[in-house]
Amino acid sequence: QSPWQRGTNENTNGLLRQYFPRKTDLSGYSQTDLNKVALRLNQRPRKTLDFETPASKLHASVASTG
Image (spheres, rainbow, N blue to C red):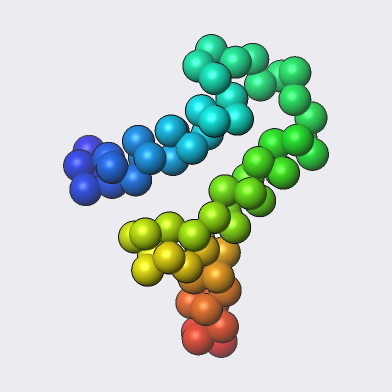
């Protein structure tokens, strides 16, 4: 329903596939394992964010609002 988000979604899926191949049963992973993958992805610089990390962009955004 939001075609402008399609590229970001597909890119994120591709990044996740580096850790979890298609049809992987995630029940075999602990929450700690999943959190580690999320942290690695959030600390990865993105071209669309001018090579800043999602975490740093979020921190800057939250810091500027309050």
